[in-house]
Length: 564
Image 1: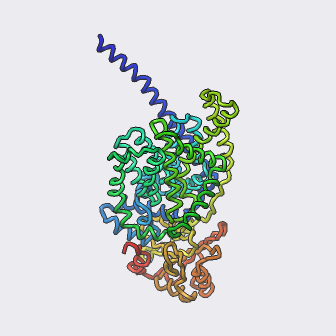
Image 2: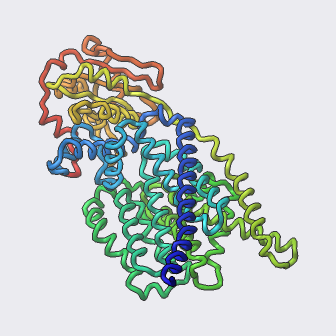
Image 3: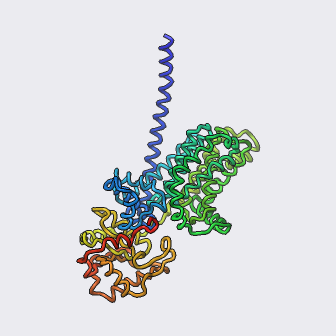
């Protein structure tokens, strides 16, 4: 009888717990749906689904497409050999300069959904949604649902994140893993369990294998020790566990690719860079969240540092958020990779969490002065509500004016190329500015029916040259006659042109225009789109389509020199 009663009691205890878990899951699903709907809505409003791949986007797409094609058609061929070959056809593969992990995620997504731009934008929306959902889960049990809703939606609707969500970039995946790592480290501060320290190490490794600026996570544990005054952690083995995890998994990758990655550094180490980056990053955060949110975030950060005692389970979440903010800010202000607002995407979630905490402190301080020292416990909920209202009123207007990206569609021109494609001479010269070059190559690769089967020859490679990203660009030839001779030397049958823009235009674009005038009988216009700016023109070079291409020379022309 006693055993039966105990069993009934245990079952009765479990029923409310099961119902609570079910309710929490339903709540998270509902929040995820609302976040995703908001993100996709802003993607459509910003014209993301009708815009081509721009700048680094094209490289990230091509890299994921390469992994997808390898997984579906080339296993068990050597992946490095295949990378070299694919890059020769579509010379935008970024693996090496960036880590491979997100490209694997892209490839799996392509297997499940498709290789279209719309599918990739939905992947970007999913990553952003997951970041916002992590913020909600992190905040809801500590500051309440209203605070969690504000933080989650403020993260996904901030101008920096909106732009990142409307592109295929690596900044939001890094931000997601930084937030997940922050959550794991908060649990480690709570419990001291080695499994949470190991989880932090694995999440940091994943972020590092996406992009190098995830190295900011190396600063999170030291800042957590300082801010939380948890010097006792230095004496336990679990604190040091992330070091071998990251070192053994991500270390070899960065040792092997550092010379390539360092080419992307736009500045030099030193005090001058720190001053420049600090001023620029301050302006970026001010533009991203507004003055009130930034001030409240600073208040929250100062409050987390100035607490009167070492952190315990009640405030370890605050310490982990403050540590992530400090880690990202310090890294982006000291390491001279580049200065761009999107690099601060991982800083927005902890900043907004600290801002909610700071607003609560500020409002309670105001109430304290009004009530002249009377007990404040009954006013804490009101303080939270007032603080959130003020933050929302300050923040929301800045989310409504995100400029749409320019549109220059190469898809139809790419289709015309494939309609006239000859397997014996599979090449096209892409003669556009820097942005258009990547966009055109991505569109050509996207609709390649036998990927890779078309050499997208970069004008900046055949007709020009320079360092990383052509920063030291110089034209390879002096005259239009020499440019025409180079086209004939490789028997290139098609030339895709899309105007010139900017004061630092590539000289070979002018030379191509001059060649059209000098040899009008050779340049046959087969496609023209004047509805975009700059306009898109596709020419067939008479006399070349019937020639047989020298495939070995084409492979060598666009081969990845860093892997040779």
